[in-house]
Length: 201
Image (cartoon, rainbow, N blue to C red; front, side, top):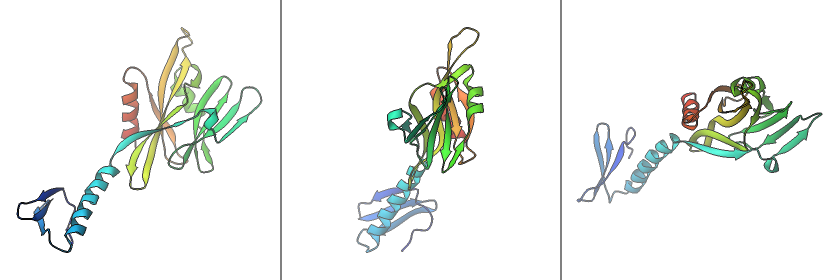
């Protein structure tokens, strides 16, 4: 016996021992003694739970600390590149040189070069990734966490007054086409960065 369509909610057990599931067209009920009851009732609950879980948006975090790096190379001068663990098939390629550091996205064997856009969005001179934290914005699905954006902090210097400029950069994850889609700054920067990431997923 099957329930046509998707259940909206489990209505529960009536006093006469009948269990009901609310449908768009009304209530669908089954005797608790039915041989198919347990299978139908549990399947309905799991269906509703899975639907809610698939829509859950959340953040997870990884680190670019050198001690957690997968690889690290130093080049002539102050150049360096480091590959750090990521999520959802992505890795962080953390690069530096000429008194600047920034994040590139590695997807499979492809490294997406975000140097130019990172420098533009930083807003000042000599931008540097401000800390070891990388925020991954994504959804929880039946197969686990699926990221659609990376958020990280970058600091630079205002050339006019030498004051620090601190911003959150938002990277849309799209495989080899991943790109920076904007930045946020100020008292509401964290909420605004998440909103920007969520709006472009």
